[in-house]
Length: 91
Image (tube, rainbow, N blue to C red; front, side, top):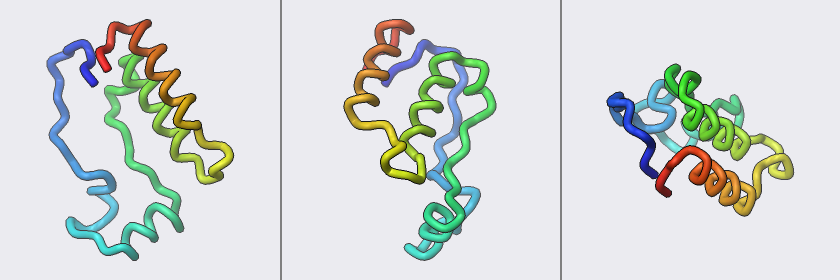
């Protein structure tokens, strides 16, 4: 996915890097994701970029605890296609 360039690139970090050890066990991840229901955070600058804000919203909706509340793959596909058309994003 290619977004219009803003010149800002975040350094890559593994998901949950700030919540688990560098080589987490299954139990470490289970505690954070299943028990505490924590999710990776988004950089603050995502709130000021409409495309990134929408992407974060889609991702958050995919992480709903109740499976019936999660977006379907078809809904994600349609949402991304709509974003691609309206914001000049190449998927």
